[in-house]
Amino acid sequence: MMEAERQQFHFSWPLFQLVSLVKGSVFVIFYLFILKAGSNSAFILALKGLFIAFLVFSVIKIFLNWIYNRYEISETTVTLYLGIFVKNQRNVELKRIQNVQQTTNFLHRLLKLTSLTLETGTAGEEAAVKFPVLSHAEADRIKGLVEEAKRVHAEPLKSIADEEGPVPSPPLPERQIYFTAGMKDLVKAAFTSLSMFAIFPILFSLYFQFDDFFNLDETSQSVFAFFASRLWLLVPVFLAALLLSAIIGFITTYSKYGKFVISADENRIYIRKGVFTETQFSIRKDKVQAVKIEQPVLKRLLGMAEVKLISAGSVGNDDNEINSLFPFLPANEAYRLVEELLPQYEISSSMHALPKSALWIRLLRPYYFWIAATIALAVFKMEWLWLSAPLFVIFIVARLLEYRYTRYRLTERFIQIRTGAFSATTLLTKRVKVQEIEVTHSWLQRKFGASSLHFHIRSKPLLATELKDVPRETGAQFYHWFKDRTHFVK
Image 1 (tube, rainbow, N blue to C red):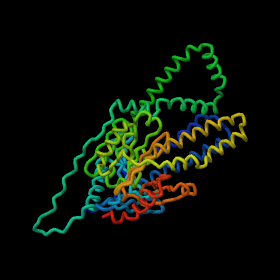
Image 2 (cartoon, rainbow, N blue to C red):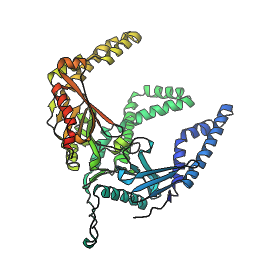
Image 3 (cartoon, rainbow, N blue to C red):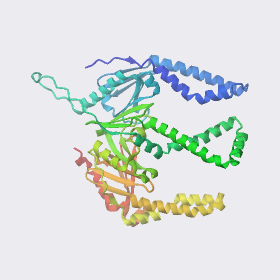
Image 4 (spheres, rainbow, N blue to C red):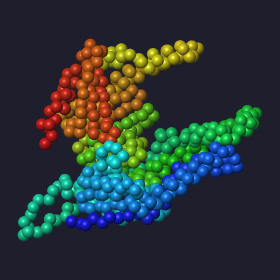
C-alpha cells in the first residue's frame, strides 16, 4: 500500500487566483479609476476606498489559502484539508469518481501547467474535487490513481496461493480515434452557430454602454446624416462589416472547437477540444445514463445534429458543451458515432407514432399563452389585436407538427422517445438507468383513453422526461416495464 503524503498546492496557484480576481474586477477598476479618476464626490471616494480594502483582503486571503490548504492522495482516497481559521477535511473515495476533466487555458499553457476536476456525480457544492493548478506529471499521476482505483473496485482481486505467483497487470487499453474536426467542419460550425453575426449585438451593446458615460447622440446623428446623403456607401460598409463579423465568428469557433478529437478505448470515451484553452474530458461508458440527440430549427433544416452523453456527474460551468460530441455533425454521422462509441445503445429509426386521438387531445388542450397574449393586446395595444389571429395559427401549426414528429419505442432493454415541433429531441436510455416513473391521466386524456409517461434518469441536474398522449395500454405496459426491471437486472 502506497503511503500518502500531504502536499501543498502548486506554487503558481496564487498567481491564477490573482489573475481571476483582476478579471472579475476589470469593470469596477475601469469605472472607478479611469472614468471617475478626477471625481471628488464623497460617494465615489468611499467606493474607491471600499474597493481597495476588498482587493487587499482578497489578496491576503489568496496567499493564506495557499499556505494552509493541502491535499493528500492515496491509492483509494483523495483528502482535502481546507480553511484558514476554520479547518475542513473532506474525503472522497477514488472509486466514486465518475468523470475526469482536464482544462489547460492560455496561462496554463504559458507556464506548462494544467488543471484537473474530478466529478463524483453527487449534487451540491462538494460534487467535484478541483485542482486549479497542477503540473502535467501530477495530473497524470492523479488520473492514473483514479483509473487504478476504479479497476480494482470493478474487478476485485481473488486470493491466490503463493505458488501461483503474482497477478499479472492487465494490458493498457488501446485508444482509437473516431472523429477529428477538419477545416470544413469548423466552417460549417461557424455559420450554423451564427457566431459570425455576434459582432452586431456586441457593437450595439457597447454603443449603449458608452453612451451612458459619453454623449454620443451628436456624433451618431452626424454619421447617419453622412450616410443618408451617400446611400451608395452603405453597400461596401455593410459587406465589410459582414466580412469582419465572419472572420471574428470563425476565429471564435476555431478557438472553441479547434483540435476537436473524439476517441475511445474499451472502457472510456475521450473528448478533447480547444486551441487557446484546451479541455480534455473522459467518461466511462458504463456511466453513461442516456444519449440525447438534439436538432434545433437551423440544424434540422441543414440535416445536422448534436449528441449529448448524459452522465451522473457534470463538470465545470460548461457542462452541456463538454458532455457533447461535436455539436455540428451531420445527422447520419451523429448516429454512426453513437453506434461505434456505445454499441450497447441501440438507436432505431423505427418507432411508434401517436394515435389519432392524441391529435385531438393536443388541439383541444387550452391555449393559455395565446389567451394571455390576446388579453394583454386588448388591454394595452388594441390596435395590435389583429396579431392574435396569426399567433393562434402558429400555435395550431406547432401542435400539428409536434403530433406528427413525436415517436416512441419501448423494448425489453430500452426506451427511446422523440419529441418536438420545429426542433426535435431524441432520448435513448436503458431500462436499468431509469430511476423513477409516473403515469398520469388528465380529464381530457381519460376521455380519449390516453395517458402521459414521466420518468427520471439519474444525472446532475436530475433529467426529467415526459411523453404525452400515448395510448392507455402503453401507460400500463410502461408501468410494468419499470416494475419488473428488478427481474431484468442481474
